[in-house]
Length: 257
Ligand code: COA
Image 1 (cartoon, rainbow, N blue to C red):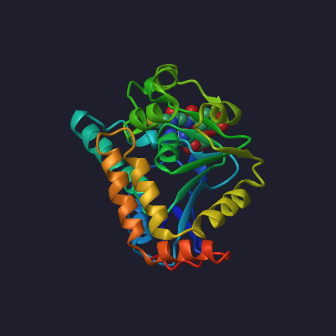
Image 2: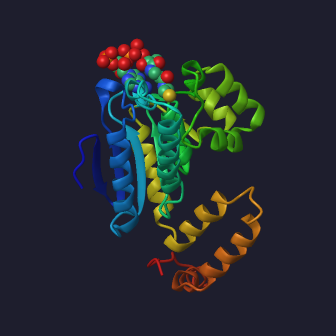
Image 3: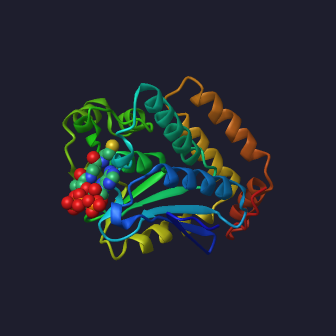
């Protein structure tokens, strides 16, 4: 697909999705948000794509936040619409049945940190910087950040970050569980692809059922959803194949059904 502010490249079933407004440190303006929305519709429906890696263009930023230059026209009503639209998009990313890795290659600020939080896994480069600096503009994270950051790193740490706007480096993000791994900038995409290759070898229905169940962790429905998803897996041909392959001491070959 062709976009103005996104670059897409598919190789070995892995879509590398690069947010590309380097002159604005890849800030998410409305056009980029709309393009991300269309791109994820395409990701959902394209059977060639087995997993997605999201990164930012250049060596400085993943995404430096929502585009602040679009903020001056905002009022209460426009603010509500903007936040709802951002939440809907980031839910679409979080609920994607295919694994989504954020390759955080620099600043992940505000909406950029929220985008990383909506991905299933975050991998940071050594120069990555995370922050929720919205408070400095008199607003709060509005694309799901207050919820996802809190559930990922705990309420005390999340509230401190959101109230101070403190920037944290990759090592601190790693120690808080915000980043799963840290690599040099030159190795980042390579390592993300290596991890993605390992994941997408697994049975696709089970992959999507893990994501769905984990997305519901902490809600009252989480445990019943686990039962439903386990049951769905046991109805697949891939389940038969996985068990048979184990018993026959060979590697399973999965078809996604
Ligand atoms: N929205 C719009 N434009 C942004 C932006 C954002 N969130 N973040 C950076 N940019 C633009 C800058 O305005 C600048 O554009 P210009 O060259 O036309 O003036 C360009 O990107 C480069 O940024 P600059 O500030 O010159 O780089 P820097 O290295 O001095 O600082 C940051 C980098 C990330 C620390 C700084 O740009 C920043 O604080 N950005 C805003 C982060 C933020 O508050 N995000 C949350 C928004 S809710």
